[in-house]
Length: 129
Image (cartoon, rainbow, N blue to C red; front, side, top):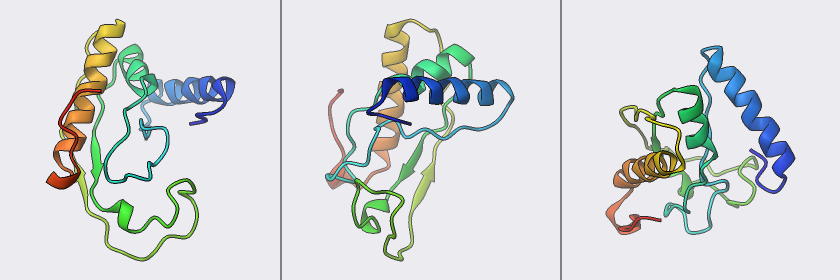
């Protein structure tokens, strides 16, 4: 997504909604950027969760346990990275229930909790955001 340009972000979400309605899978990284503190996560943005609630699709949380070991510069995720095995945990789907802002925030926090639970203990956040 385009985190610094709200018009482009809106267009990207519209395209994602269209793809979901066609039955396609969409991958969204809800942090908006890879933090320098990886693998500790930044708080998630609401867009992906609002989209899931609006379209009525579940979210499949994925924990990338060791990406931080291969990223040379988290600000440039498409640049060359070091060769390394990456551990990935694919979690059970989380259903989006309701479209109110409270529902979206609950969904966002639940997905954060699920992804965070599979990070190494030393890197987990132990609070809501």
